[in-house]
Length: 313
Image 1 (cartoon, helix red, strand yellow):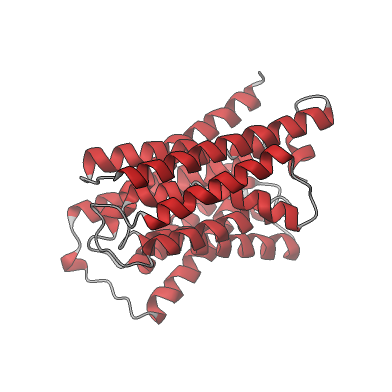
Image 2 (cartoon, rainbow, N blue to C red):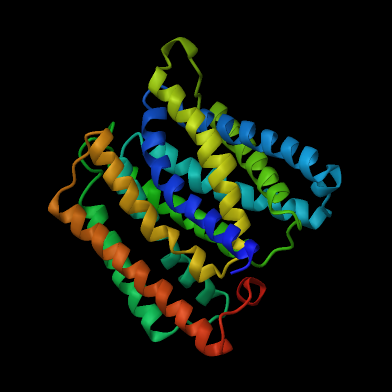
């Protein structure tokens, strides 16, 4: 492998591990911080820091982009950090971190459905995988929010399902819209746009920050989300979307929940019933089937492992 290929795989490894741990960090954040305002502040700080780093390391020209590229980045910022991540943060007030991660694992299933709507024809194996995955989601939703959640509102799991859909739309559009050449400049704009949207939504919903009541655990979780979850992992995700096949990048969806469930059990006292474990297992198996089916379809159609642009453009 070339050095660039190794770097891309290393970046995907960061997405595997760090995003799996962010669900636990979010759980600690929402213990004493308002969900939307804390998420907005997280992405605003991370986006501003990343923009400065891009300007210093690559030069101010690296931040230049056309109007079409800028507004595409803003739109994806609304869909990924704001809609996708924001609703997960809001939901983790009412659902355990492990259940949230298992529900988010459905992203590749949504992506396949959206691509079908846009005119692509998935293979029979892919369709079977999607059907199995949807059955797993139903089982998870019937299983409830999971023991160890802060609350037990019925809509908690449904917020995560809606978050996964928004993230899927953003992921699909990121392969079809005109985007800036520098992936880190793209990531900075997305986080700034998403952070601004979350902050406005938080204020509109009446959220307020009481610094005196914020615990050390919430501060630690928030700092971890800014540095590791946003600056490192989100930027890595945007980077690998342009360097590796989408089917390969999508494999993070069945690694993240395994890590999240284990961390939730070890450090947050979360517990899962038989129904929830069964539903989670069905979703993960379905995602593996879909990702492998899509990878096989691409390989057969092209006769080789394709370049990233052949898959996502």
